[in-house]
Image (cartoon, rainbow, N blue to C red; front, side):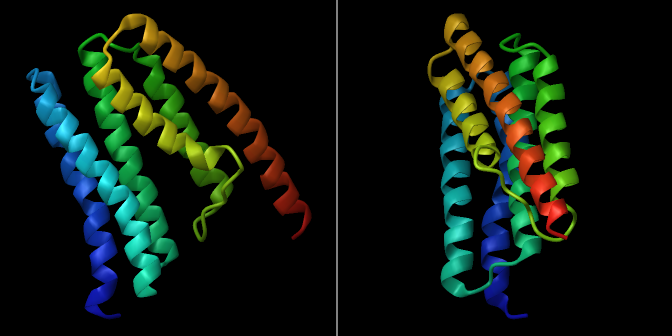
Length: 169
């Protein structure tokens, strides 16, 4: 394995570092710093997969590292939002349940994506971003309702695709 394979993983790892930085910045009312951290995290999320494909270093390990980095960042961001009273703590239960469903239906080899579920992480990141930019209660409630609808639909489609995959074995 060459040094090239470490570049996409290094980009992904930035999100593991960004999570506690966001947490600290947000809880200390450094909203511009929080926004910068989110933007940097979004850039690394886009770049890591692109670089891995361009360098021919894509792997299942890298895919799971990417999903885990996203999950860690999302959970820490929402934890900060919960501490500030922006969201109900039950949102973490929903996010963790969706991640566990992803892991359970993916096995430990290659992630299985359903048509909607693969966009759930992107929606959660967008939700974090919009909540930070427009911290209005009504908007956060709308975002939460959309999240619940996306999660319900994702559960149904993921189970459908998982059952279809199981029938093909």
